[in-house]
Each structure stands twice: as structure tokens, then as C-alpha cells.
Length: 416
Ligand code: GLY
Image (cartoon, rainbow, N blue to C red; front, side, top):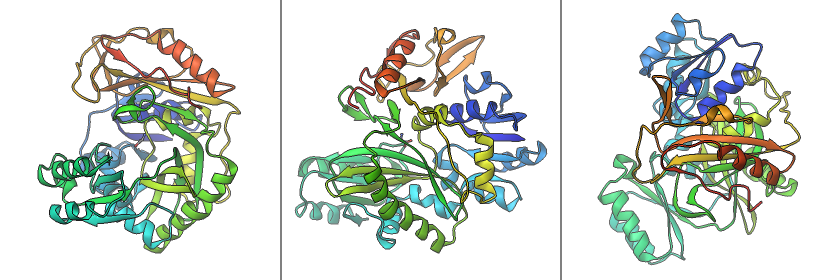
């Protein structure tokens, strides 16, 4: 089989790494890929192509299945274009991708389908949103409606912070048209769980639970990032919480997807919080998480090519996922200064010294050297019997890697 993967991050590297192990797979093309994907067996990076040229490439190269990594092409309707051209693709249709593309759409979907979630109100006028603040209990969560690269969710502890967030989003338009409307949502205090799941329109099959670490600093301090580390499975996701999640979040979500009649053959990521009262849904993403994918795929025993076939042919109902009976810990190394300004082009050394999987998030090969290209540069995933052991091993491994300004949290897995 020939695969095309769209994207350039650690998630796409992990997908390429896992697919390359499949005896079913002969070739993997990654558009545009990165310095890690190009080094994997069976993998070839190709230039970043626009939607029309991606379809053309898939046709001309007899691609069997295309996997869309990031949310933006999904929200723009890339999968609809592929399916109109008779091409197999993993990702929801444009209308289904609104579950991530619009926070207001997504919260309305949850409300209309009885999915357990926090209370919220949507505003498209700044003044009305500010007026509403006088009725709020604190803290509140202000969310820009559209895609904002993970930065559009702001927790505000008082009126001043919330008014400031609303002004930046709705008046100053720091996220552009993503801030044309906002939702103001009750803040749920608790423990977060990431549940990535496979969806074929008839069945939602959850993958192993994971725990992301979104803040830049140890102890979950400092600004949010794309994710600085993950452990899997998430020990807070007990069987009791799982039953609550299945009954009050997963099942109503499936009913909602079916009643909307979307072609949702792809990935649905449930961002869950365990608060007083059990599991609540914070958000949906319509793609695999990054860095959750880097922690989950190394534990998965199934052939990933087969997994994608099952999604495409709507055969998930009698399929099951098997995992190594171990835990994983992924630690992300970023460029000093991230998520603010940071230097690029730093040479990464030590990558050949590792015994555990290395995933490149933002680095490119130039003249035989691996150079940093974006804030999150790479991650190491260690696997061991317990989270504690996996965490210790991940830190021993990542200490072998170096580049100017390298920064990573030193407490991933420590609180579990
Ligand atoms: N790690 C969270 C995300 O992928 O959005």
C-alpha cells in the first residue's frame, strides 16, 4: 500500500514511523514532512502542495490512503475534495471538522446532543460580552471561536483579565477573524485527559488515554504551548470515569455525528476534564493530538495501515486495539523562549545516541545537519513498566540531545 501523510510535525513523524513498520506498506510520502520523516524507512518528503495538487499527487502516484495530520486542511474541506475524486482519506468532511473549527458550533453541538460539558454563552458583540462579565463567577474561560493555533483559550481569574482577553480577541483581533465571536464558559477545575479515537461514522473506538502537559513550565506554570510532554495511559482515567465518559460524552457524540449525516471517517480527539461530578467534555479536536500521538503509537500493537483501512471501509465495529502492557512518557524539547520568540537554525546533536524513539516536530536536514526550525523541535518517547520508570528513561535519553537554548520541562510524569 502507498500512503500520503499531510503535515510537518511530531504527530506526522510518529504516524510515518509507525506506518513504516507495516508489512502492508511499500511507500510513504509526506507533504511537506520534516527532518525526521525523511529519515524513516519507506518515506519520501515532498514539497508542501496546495489542495488541488495534493489530489493530483494522490491520483498520479496511486496513493491508497491519505492521512491528514493537522486541523486546518480539514476545516478547509480537503477531505471532501479527495472523496469527490474517489480517493481514500482519513479525516472528517468540512462540516464535521467544524467541531474543531468553531468553538461556538462545537459547544452548540454538545448542548443539542446532550454531551456533558460546562455552561457557556456565545457573543459576537464586544460590549455585550463585557456586560455579561458582571454576572460571572470567577474564574471564567474566554475562547476565540475560530482556530488560533491553541492560543485562543484564555483562563481569566477576574473581571480585568476577562475584559482584557475580550478586547484582544474581539477588538484588537489578535487571532484575526477567529475572534469575530467568542464563548465565555464556566471554568471547570480538575484533571485533564486526552482521548483520541477512531471514527468510521458507525462506531467510535477510543485509543489509549493520555495526559498532556500544556504549560511551558514545571508544575503547570506559565503560558500554554502546543504541549510539552505526555504520559500514557492516563492513570486518572479509571474504569468508573471511562463508563461516565462513554455514556455521557462518547455515545451522545456518535448519535450527533450520525444525525448530522457527516462523512466522519477520521479521528476525533476528546479533551476531557475530570471535575466534581465526573467527566466533562472541554473540546473536540478532529485530528490526532500532538504530542499525544507520539506517546500512544509506540504502545500500539496493531498495524497502523490496517487501522486506517478499518476507518476507511467502516469496519471498526468488530475491531479492537491492542497495546503493550507498559507505559510511555514523551518529553518535548523546545527552543529557548518558546512559546514567545526563539532562535531558529540551531544544530541538533546527539540524536544517534538514543535507544528510544525520537520524533522530530520542527527541524530540517541541511547539508547533513539537523537544524531547529520551530518552537517545539523534537520529542523523545520512552517506554517502561511504569510511568515513573518511563519518565526516568525519557529524561536520561533526552539529556543526550543538545542544541543551543534547548529547553524542556523536567517534571513530565512526575505528578502521576
Ligand atoms: N496536545 C493537544 C493538541 O494536540 O491539541
